[in-house]
Image (cartoon, rainbow, N blue to C red; front, side, top):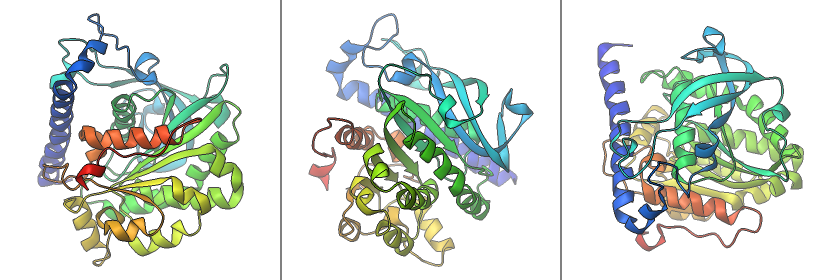
Length: 352
């Protein structure tokens, strides 16, 4: 990577940290009444399950690095599917939290591999919903895992959290390699989702995919629906595509092939997403779904959220992590597709 690429990558990482810190501070201010839900000792009454039991489920098609015993855990090269349980350390929280100003954050402490999907979940009374995150372009294994933790924590998810990490080079100029690696991983993604669908310990599987990750997720959903049919519809809950980096024509054709699963899809778009503008240019000017016309997507039977007015940064490509209003949309979509969930609602309707 050139020094220019390194400077851009550092700027992007720093921007994401600043956005999270500001979003946390704004949310605390705007939801002043909710600060009473924090224990002065640091444990939240409304904590996500992952905060209380910081174990992240992992599936990755990256080749292990350092035997997956130490950072970076998994590298950028393609490898066999690996399943694991990752032990995290959550940030300390409380009335005067360092996490709120970006001085403390989630950390990945250890990885324990397992042999099959069924070994990921510890048998428990009843079933457990799973929040399943598929990352986008230009991500290391560790940043993808920690983004899954931030997402789960941000929406206060009560269930298991899992990340599927495909082999991204984590370099600004390796976009094509990343897209190819994502598509190469689709059969492994299908294998993992199939294992969750058939597991007696899993309730609903709620999928959140970002950027290039939406492309491989949509391919896997096509295969899942063809294989499992009604079982897939019953076990898959919300499907949220955040800033989808996928050709509009390809996406439209895929929507027609996933049957009733299409009605579970929520698409978060933004016409000021500059990363998707560059991706569209690279793709020969073909519109990316995350920057497509809202009415055209709604005509496919999808829930569509226009977050164009929510972003104020340089790229506006990671609003699902940095913006509290977009996180509310994800939370509402999941609530609507949990067992006994109510009608679908979205927190940005009034602004659309």
